[in-house]
Length: 127
Image 1 (cartoon, rainbow, N blue to C red):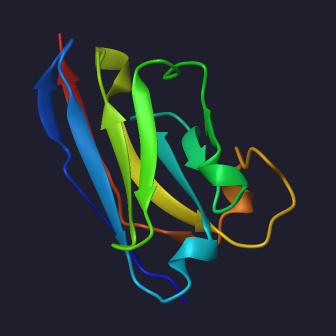
Image 2: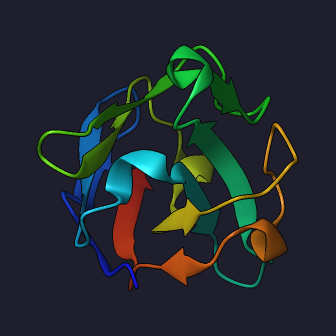
């Protein structure tokens, strides 16, 4: 069982930066692939980024955030962060942290690839 809790959301102007953090419970955090998803009003939840537990922590990003967002993890603190730079109004959404265990898929871009979810953190980018 893994419990996830996001923090760090808020309101920022376009072009600004925010850093989201996800704290995880459980002693096996280091063996989970960790992802970030987001859901904008009226839209489906979509993949943002994932960091693998193995393969040297390989990362994958959605095209819409590649080059602006950076996912990282600290297995000693059981945390995974999402650094968001050059934010745009279209980045406004509720951001969710998610944990995946034992999946064969490399990129893990689908919701059904994940076993545990946080409650979400609101990010609002004003124009």
